[in-house]
Length: 280
Ligand code: ARG
Image (cartoon, rainbow, N blue to C red; front, side):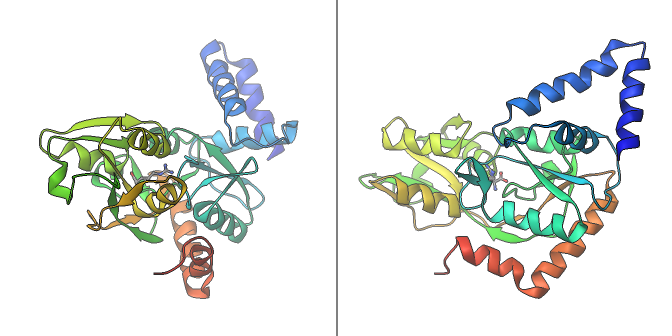
């Protein structure tokens, strides 16, 4: 690990083109700004990050497994006391443990995750991310670890009765999500895109928009936290959540699938999900 870092630094020093080094600087600055960063900003972490960013690198025992996420999505990923927790964080930690690696979580905009993974900045995207044809153009997905549906959140006093009633209305979504895709398809709709799902829900409470389309589990959390909101009793779709991995990193894909299979087999996956979602 050390050797590799040294080699990388040397390459940077020797590179005639400044651009090669600037690339590294840029991501370092980005990393420092990431809200998910904990206090241990020592040299060791920098080294680990540099390694995590090496493109096409194979995962090794003792290495760092970088997870890209958007921690605005309870109960899958959200902040608790400055730390990213939730179903995805725990699944990723369990996978890292099986691989003998240290998990590092990078919080970013949801619509940056696929790029971050496909360019090798992060090793895997774990973000309640639905497998879609579109995303499959850029990344591979692991076997699914959860199913989900999109739902509609309304104000209690709304005159909207069903999904068809969204026609001509103003609908809020989190930018780049499957909810965003569905909203686009509604006839005569105005789509308001927010960086965080929670911001869409707030806008709904404040009567700035008529409805929010979002995944069911975060919808439940947001409705519980905000008075006067309800979830429409009509599910939109069935989707599958899976882990996004760079197309050229088939080794990690296999490792993650093997780890997931073990977690399913041992009951650990159900245990993690059950900790955050109570069965109806
Ligand atoms: N399942 C939806 C999608 O894949 C929403 C995921 C949003 N996740 C998040 N961590 N904010 O588009």
